[in-house]
Image (cartoon, rainbow, N blue to C red):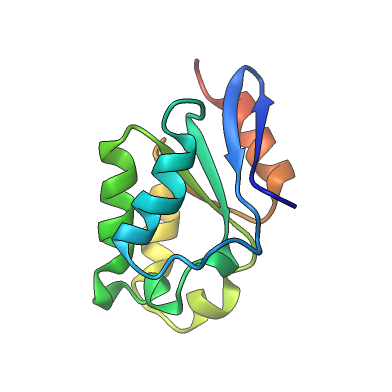
Length: 124
């Protein structure tokens, strides 16, 4: 499935293909997410498996760099999928996920249905 622009409750969402290029650097995020979504989407939903494992190891700084790039471009990032093995391996990642999911810019969700439900709760 190629990347697909969909709309949930009036919010344009770019749903990225799981088979797309891996996101191993902040530049990858710029090249593959911002470029594709900047003019159309407000939310970019990326399958968790697209992220290099270093993204989930917060000590590398990769997650912070990617998240900052997307926020700078006013894009909301949603990491979609099971990250439980990363959560078990990290003391800091569960805190990031919990705090991110309380906010409006970065969410971690299990699937696209959960994303759609979250978007219905968001004030427009």
